[in-house]
Image (tube, rainbow, N blue to C red; front, side, top):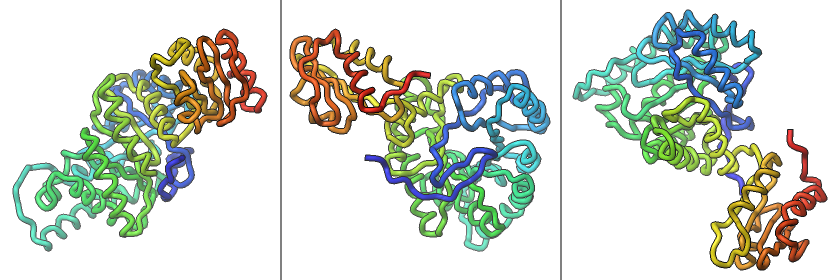
Length: 388
């Protein structure tokens, strides 16, 4: 069963499209200093090699903007055509200046036009509107350049970096995160700019999940259908970072939400890409290779389930979209693998039954021949392709 995906507008990021019926895109972010052209290029090349579709880099100063033509030239020389996204905080002029050199600009609505002073203040409705007018004046030069250079925008809201204005009225809450983004969306709409993507990031998956769900509800109420960029920010590294990302991103993908994802790991950027693919594959949001079902084994298993599963994976993982079950015994095997295209099920000591769908098509094959017979079965049903 596949998640029913929320329908959105389609936004172009250079040659890549996000939203609508487009595949859910995978992106990452450079860790290199953006003024170090050589370091950026080497990192971009590593991301390109693992098929990262969109690459973001930080733009903290004008020197970083000035480095972008050289980065572009070297990418062109190497035949790398990935879209670039500029990540800008605190300095609206940098966001305006960088539009000429990238396909998308990411801004944080909590710090684009505001400096956080941690002031406790009650805003009257009139004062709040005055603040929004000030934000609009700051945002208009960016809108003009985004249009001029056919550049997209991500409104990237972060939990913990909301403006004082929002904090005082809504608190440091998912509701505050959503309102922070909506303030900017409404301004953009008034000025006929629709090439927008939204994110609601938090290091807490529970906050992140609630914020995205609330954002979609509020956008629906205002007839907004912008694509979503999903991510758990500052997820960490190793197992912790992967589990947090899988919980946050995977939950929303199962809701049918999300059009591009970034797994934020405290590791080399290229390590994020296989994790992102695994999350998409596991939620069946985007299929990259064969899908495997295997049981954890128990005392009823009469063959080495772990090594056999690895052997089958090594032979068949390239079969995109084919579901293969490796089950230890006939007690739960046939029922639990009902969703599989092909099944390898223990029938007794070193004896294997092979299934096509829910039908057992070969009985009591000696285990030493069963993997090859499984491959033959896949070929007989037209699902085999030779590895690239």
